[in-house]
Image (cartoon, rainbow, N blue to C red):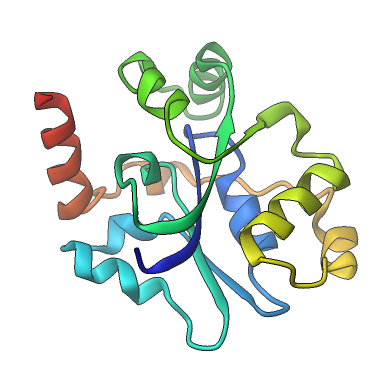
Length: 171
């Protein structure tokens, strides 16, 4: 366990926005960091000395135990699949991951609540262990839309994630 926190959930569950919000004022958050890792030892590269450090990663649920605190963003799979089709013209079936995400230990937050300040404050407090809530960053980012570029979907998910998905599917 090397990270202070991890935020995970399905694709299209605001992990990019959460990563941006969780970066600053004593906290650091890397988005989709696991795709950059070749081994589990590489995960520690997300740690920023002297800062509360974590990741916001849609594959995080495949890596239990890498963070002290876990936030799981829950969103109905039908919404995620519809969003993927609308935004990227990609049909996906995420049902194979539904149970794994639902059974991930941590603070479960409903996607539809992520525009509420009290919910974001709850995530911040849980992940940062009491750092003061960044009101200014909230006021700047609350209406910002962070979206994935279509080209990034074609990016390789990385050897560590590929290995973990393969192991997970064999269970």
